[in-house]
Length: 572
Ligand SMILES: Nc1ncnc2c1ncn2[C@@H]1O[C@H](COP(=O)(O)OP(=O)(O)OP(=O)(O)O)[C@@H](O)[C@H]1O
Image 1 (cartoon, rainbow, N blue to C red):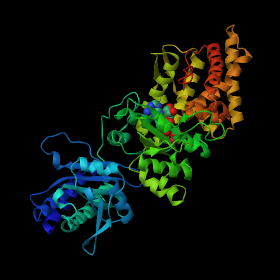
Image 2 (cartoon, helix red, strand yellow):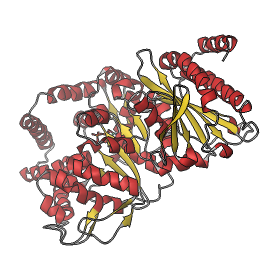
Image 3 (tube, rainbow, N blue to C red):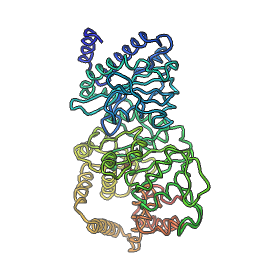
Image 4 (cartoon, protein in one colour):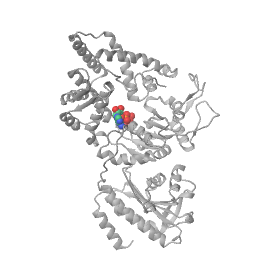
């Protein structure tokens, strides 16, 4: 690049108002430089420069992706392309530009201006090689984008199609200097300019609220959802990771097949392999019949493994082998190797790389699952969503009792919620909404077609919330007992009564809460020491009996409908 070109480029960067503007200017510059290098090379009429891509990906996940696609300039629909996970891995580990020779799986770098092969014969994952081949890419150049402090915050790539140049230096030596200059000049702008606001993310049943902050992430997630590669959803507990995983499944071609959840917090380490792979009769004490694991149950569908950091080192080895070979064997079944036809989504609320550094998580597995990482921000960083979520949750609660009913949340109440902090994220907000709803019913009597939630209901619900941080379980139980005593008094005043037997519903309420929280009946029973019943598959019957008592309590309190989702349904 000559000085005039550099000055013109800097001027464009200075005019950029958003990350997208600056990224587009940089990619345009890179594509022009690549075309120039190709024109001057021996492959001038035998290849073409296809596209450039830039992504912001500071540590924990993709923030934004910009694509300039010259291969589709003619008005063909732009297919959503994803950056190469292999290129990213090399960029992070080497900290310098690299080139990929896709058909050979060869990775190059430059040392003293001479190309040097870093790896021969396949970079990670057939999926990503296929993805590049499917979009005609034979050569890919990747350059790191560094923030002021030198940390790599993203990557820019240029893709080219030139089958004749496979195994050759191609234009790498001639091009690398221009790409590095453009990336180094643009990186400070890319790291500091605001993201272009994304609006109009279409909501649906599974994702009913999308605020401004989430819209850009959801746009990317929509693309990620349609890929086959492993998706890693990070973010604090209660932020909505498992719901988003389900949403991704519904967006994918696998949507007609099962969506299975393996929540590792609820599975003891010694059972993790069995839960994943299933077992054969007699494989261990208590294995009375062949039992499929979640990989088998998710056949042709999606398996969401939540709290992946809780995976034992042994199970990590098993999962890595499965991800690499796509085959597995149920425990105790030496003979039958089965094909794993499943898309994996994994969830984590801790920084997995910290776990790698601490020696608790295998580095190779980390890179295997860190192909499409996204981090869901805490609710406090998307406060524009609080009121809308509260409305959605209140209506959802009301319709559990009164199908088709409506709920109004008064403006003062919404303000109160928007000002509050939500360390427990959406789960905490849901609890507060449910509590406020119960309080509104207590003051206004039975649920009618419309319920109005006022500021005082939320103020009281939030006061329990603050208290609950300090209250022991026993104190919380006393609070519940007081509410029941108040209710008995109210009913007595109306000439009705409340029998002491309604308190038998408590076991059912505890189990229902655990099922909702853990997302699985098996896990809920195991949590309360009833693993044997799960093993014998007796727990569904037990739950049914407990739920009859809960129904009796609801009836006595004049509440219609089931207090827990799925209550009364037969499962498994
Ligand atoms: N898309 C959604 N639709 C309806 N409710 C939601 C949605 N996302 C989150 N919620 C509410 O927030 C609660 C927590 O969501 P979820 O279980 O998905 O969080 P999480 O991040 O997976 O939590 P954890 O890390 O503890 O597993 C849900 O029980 C539900 O009440």
